[in-house]
Length: 49
Image 1 (tube, helix red, strand yellow):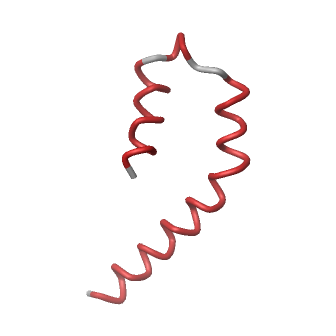
Image 2 (tube, helix red, strand yellow; image 1 turned 120 degrees about the horizontal axis):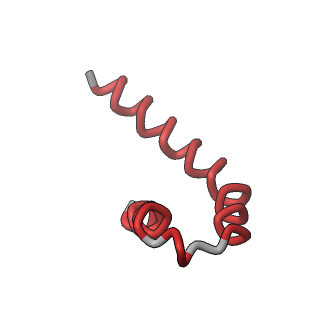
């Protein structure tokens, strides 16, 4: 999670430093996995209630 927050902060506050190719690489390579992990966490939270 800290890496996600750091990446978001760079995108929001350091937009002049952003390498669009690197952002696209992260989106294509890591976003699907992140979505799966978030979905699993949401299911766990729902089951706990």
